[in-house]
Amino acid sequence: MTLLWANMLRALSMMLNIYAWIIIANVLLSWFLSPQHTVKQFLERITAPVLDPFRNITSRFTSSMPIDIAPLLAIIVLNVAKEVLNMFANQLLR
Image (cartoon, rainbow, N blue to C red):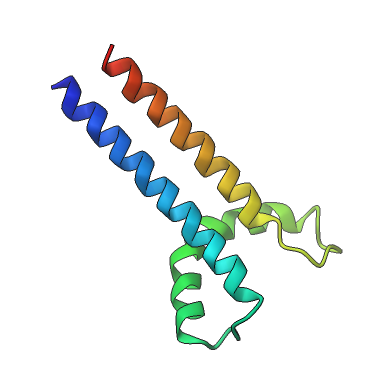
């Protein structure tokens, strides 16, 4: 049973990693594609639920900055969550 839980935690960790790469793709494509492009709109719909809370937080401090740091913060939080899940999965296997 613990092997099942460990594998589920690792799968969730992999999904968080994929989501972080989707955020990176969204950021990189924002430099090249117009906001009306179909791919850009799709990626924006996928990433908005995670990025919007970070944008709300950072808008208070970075309103004069021309760079959106919300994706960076989201990726950091996703990586921390991924490492915590991996740590729990490794503990289950011991």
